[in-house]
Image: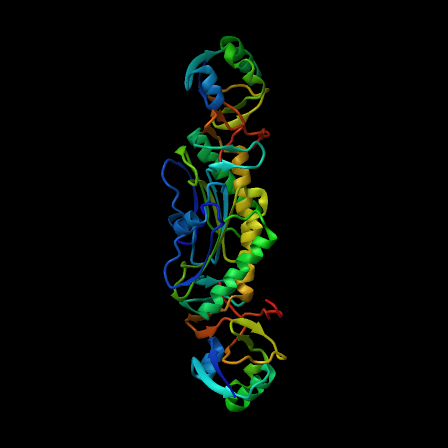
Length: 154
Length: 154
Length: 82
Length: 82
């Protein structure tokens, strides 16, 4: 089974360990990995500038993990060259500079769309994976509003 | 000095620690990181299919580090939104599945060109940073041939 | 009758003041009818029902869908993870 | 005379059989003239001089460049890192 392409997807309260996740999606045939991580911003300048003390993430866990699997399946459908995929969302109370989400895709070579695959993964996660965050700052607390309405079949 | 944008560039014989490097280029204003890593392939299918036992990397270290700094400067010139940059090349005898190189760029948001910046970084590293690798496999050993000829001023 | 479980998340949970609820509904009730019922039973949620996302057994569901037996229904605002 | 240091890497080092070399060259020698001299002094490198990359004090240098005093000159094939 060593050549089965690994797919990791999870909602976790633990720290996101990039070294460990990368190792788990690296095969003997792998030569390139594109990884995206998102972190809690303490200071936001774009749009309504504000400060953040922490974010409180919650998730509808079993559905979120199923939708992460769906995102991975969509990636494989679009980029058949992708070998390993890891999609991890951390939840709970997360402070500035903390990585909150990771999408990583591996492939034999870097010019195979592996960067686009990772980019697609984070964009899709933010559309269909049921996770929400409440922002807590000097001015009080507020749920961050998403704006994507899934279509039938998504 | 907490808001100075960090730039890390190094040739190293040590393991590449993604968690540590990411933390070093994450600022309070950072919300996104695009990371590329390359690994030693044990099996290559594209082109002349072959197996690799290990790669032996060497570098003209002081020039390589200066050129890595230049790659980082070029990234900042093209993507002013980039906050932190890490460029690390590992050298020595490296076995399949081992990460050999890392390029990471951080920014406030993911739609700022931060993926393109990381992609540009690895492409440029492979053009101008003086590092070479010898491939050792069942059929003997052979230097991997680059093909980029730097232009004056590069 | 159909015994279903409702789950509430984020703003919806805050407004209704509970995480989940089990209730009996008529068989063949649609999502649209369920939203109307919730708007009546929980006036705090009436406004939210206009933009709420709804899932049936962990798949996104839409107004015309008929609620299956013993369904797990979740109500939440557009997602904002990452 | 100009006392310079030559560094060899990868295939070039393998062919010449050493990592570095110090030597005295006439002042105002160009990179092109240095390549010709190396091709004569080290016949193993004659063929390599056609495609070699050369740096002067850690910057890429080209045929017409005049070698400055006490320069550190490196000779190597196109890079293949990553």
